[in-house]
Image 1: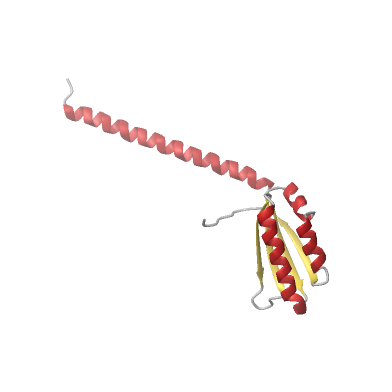
Image 2: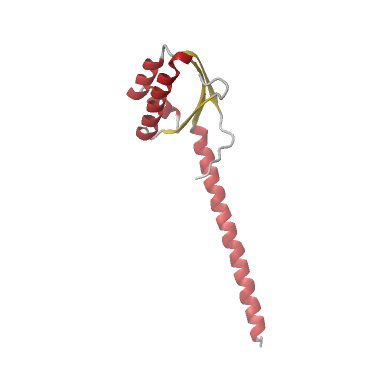
Amino acid sequence: MRNKNSYLKIILKGLVLFGLISCSFKKEKEIDRYMEQLEKDKELVVQLAELEIDPNQLESYLALLEEEIRISVRKEPGVLSFYAMTDKEQPNRITIIEIYASPEAYSTHITSPHFLKYKNGTLKMVNSLKLTRTDPVVFAAKN
């Protein structure tokens, strides 16, 4: 007959084994979530917009840009994020990172009334515009 200590050892081994199994299930679920996110990321439209604005109209341009970005993010579910920034040395050079959930979301965005208001309102302010489509590699952010 087994003594009390051998039963405890068996129970402890079982608990350790169960702990390892549940950890691997957690890791497997994390891997599944990661793979699902990768599939979603394939549909993303990520675009870099590089603009040079007439320095005399920069303030007006930035006001229209801010309005357009805030409305787009608030009203359009497919608009995931916009990041607009100016060059420290030349503030009339603006870079915008645009992220859309899908090509359809991008198409919806560029035909929206608020985007068309921005586009038409800034036509004479923009000296140059370069759009670059990109492929997502790694995205990370803190919540």
